[in-house]
Image (tube, rainbow, N blue to C red):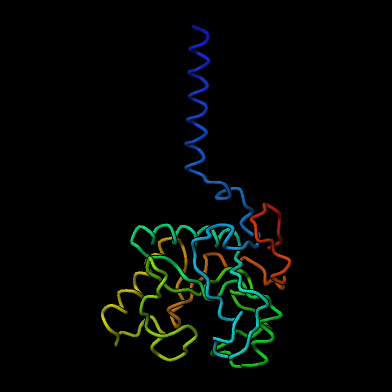
Length: 224
């Protein structure tokens, strides 16, 4: 009788542990939301095409030393939720830009000192806070879906209010926006690819180099 009771308790504890793990995967709730993390440590299935780590950008210069998507943990976990939701539709995310150190914002401003295209480093940007992401949709094979423009195209076609587009392009733009908004992101009206995490204004501008941010998620504290 005592043995069966012990077996029952053991089975119950194991089942409860598994249920808690499935409901709250490792890293999903343990991270300090203000910590800067590499998105690959949160969800490695999110594709990357970090344009400022290449010359394939509007200033035609490589500004980032490495191709990484760094975000505050709160934003990174929200983005992971978007990826998971899109996978159920046979889709996924490809990221163009995430956290941008203030030093790189200054370099970008020196190249293009025009606040229509680049945030003035004197005030900083949402990217400098690790609370903004630029991205698009891809299919199961990793191919980008047709969108109104390419990344960092500053024509009227990039605006979310621009309607003179093929039906499939309008659908793709809306699918991306709906998925991001559902997870709590705020779309920028003038750029179909840009989304801000809620509460971005509560996070400080940072100037931490990519090289100092670990590639694995750590539950260390970071000042806002």
